[in-house]
Image (cartoon, rainbow, N blue to C red):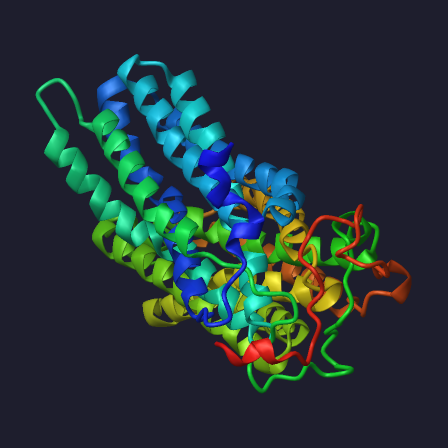
Length: 465
C-alpha cells in the first residue's frame, strides 16, 4: 500500500550526511518501551484485588510474554533482515501497543484468557520483534564498536522498568475508582504513550549506504578474536557447532542470573534478616536492576577491547567464584559482601545479553546477524524456565527436609557455579567458523538470501558520520 511505503527498506537508506549517532537513540526508543515488561509485576496485586485472580495465575501473563518474545524473535528474524528495521519496528509497536489494548478489553470483560492473549501472546510478539529489530542495524553502523552500540540499546530494555513502574503506578492511582483499580484504563494509556514513543524510533532509524564505513576505520585482515569479514546465512549458521555452543553459553549464563532475580527479595531476608526486612529487600532488588542495566553497557563496551570470547570467559570464571562464595557471606553474616557479590553477578547477567549480538557478528558476519540473534534468543526462553525452577524447587526440597531457611540456598549457589563451569567449557570450545559455511555469492544478485549487502570497504562515503 502506498500509505505505508515509508516503511519500505529502500526508504530507510541514509543520506551521505546522516549522523550514525542517531541510531542508538532510535534503538533506545524501542527498547525503553518494550522494557516495560520487567515492570509487569506492579499490576499483579491490583488485578488480584479487582478480579480475584490468583497471583500464581496472573504470573502466567509475564511468563507467556517472555516465551513469545523468544518464539517471535526466532520466527521473524529472517523476515526482519528482508524488510528492514523500520517496518519491523513499526510492527513491534503495533503488536506491543495492541497487546495492551486487547489486555485492557480482557480486564474490562473479566476474561483472563483475553488478557493472556493480548499482553502475553500479541504483546510478546511485539517484545521479540522489537528486541531484535535495532540490533543488526546498530552493528552495521558501528563495525568498529559493535559491543558498545548493542550495549546502549539493550541497556534500554533493562532500564525500561525504571520508567514503567512509577508511570504505571501513577496512572493506576489517577484512574482508580471505588469499583476499579484503574488497570484497564492504565493499559489503554500505556498503549497510546508507548506507540507514540516507539514511533520516534520508527521514523529515525536508517540503514547505511552500500560501501559505507566509519571514518578512519580499516577492518583487520585477520584477528585472533574470532572476527570474520565473511558472512554466514541464518540457516547455515544453525548447522555450525559455534551456533549451538553459543546457545548454551547464553542459556547457562542467563539461567544462573535469572534464578537469582526471581528469589532476590526472600533470599536476602532469609539469609540475614529472618524474613523481617521487606524494605531492605526492595532496595536490594532495585540495586540489582541498576547493576543489570549498567552491566549491559559496560561489559559490552569492554568486549570491544578484550574480545567477546574473553568477556564470556570472565563472566564464567568470576561468576563461579562469586556463586561459590555467596554461602560463606551468610555464615559471616556480611550483608555488604553478599550485596557486592550479587551486584557483580547481575552486571554479568545483563552483560551476557548485550555481548551476544557482537559475538554472533564476529563469528557469522553482519548479513543475517539479526536473524541469527533472534534464533539464539530461544536460549533465553529456556533459561526463563530452568533458572526459577532450579532455585525454587531446590529451596523447597531443602526446607522440607529440615534445612534452615537461611541455609536453603547453599546447594543452589553451588549448582549455579557448576552450570557456569559447563558454560566456560562451551565458550572455550568456540572456534572460528569453517570457510565451507561462508556465503560466497553476490548478496545483491536476484535470489540471494535476504539481508543487508556486505559492505564494500574503502569507499569515501564513510566520511559522513
